[in-house]
Image (cartoon, rainbow, N blue to C red; front, top):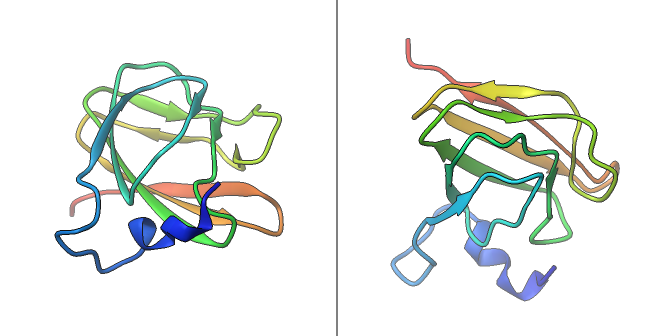
Length: 108
């Protein structure tokens, strides 16, 4: 965790912040910026918190993905979130419980 990089996870962002990174779904993922593009269908059970305080992360997957409960460390998923391909998922970190809670934003 590098709290000196907290601006990479803030909003708004400017041209100096990192571009969205693409990472493969895995049991544990480590985002490096506000928006992460996911590939693959492996269930994610832990998001390694990139900063220690409360923060929001955004994810878009190219395939159906699941943020699943069952992790055993900082960054556990508090409640399962299932998203379809190209949906936006928002995950919020609670530093008191060290867990992420989130949901999918759906177009209406």
